[in-house]
Length: 185
Image (cartoon, rainbow, N blue to C red; front, side):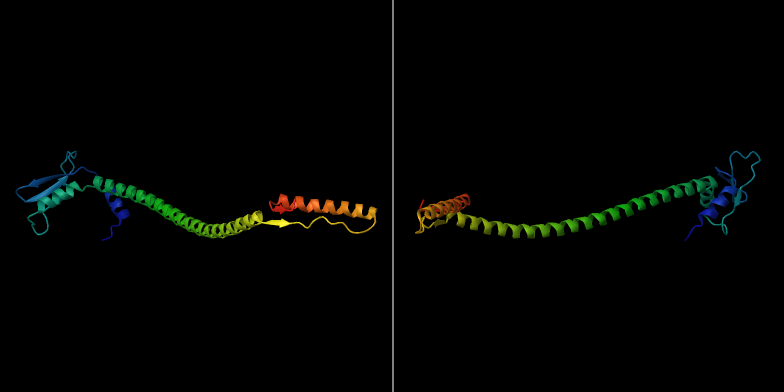
């Protein structure tokens, strides 16, 4: 059942304001509903029930209890609850969006971590391989050829020998700086 709340509010605002009271007329077996402040005792409703129902009094009491003041209070409460529901739904939607965004960020971070893990394994392999190569180079020794001098004139021999010695020393220093052992020192 759909209730037209606007129409119900209009009807309640036009009706006699509550509170209402039930009075019974024993002679006519009817029930009157009116406001206690009504000094003229005019009836808001004179209720005989539907086809002399046995629960006519209970129906009259219900009608008196559900007076316009109560109806308006319930309608106001309904409006407030609707506003609260709308606010909660807005928060829920925002949280849903935040959760979706967080899940997307988490998925992206997990993909990035997987990519970085793959690179780490790759770089660890390269580092291990290069460390072995460095160890091999450091463990290796080379034998330099002896210093020889060409046969030639004394001045040429001195020039060639000096140049050869300087070149030999540069090679020796470079090899030692690289951590390679040298035989024949």
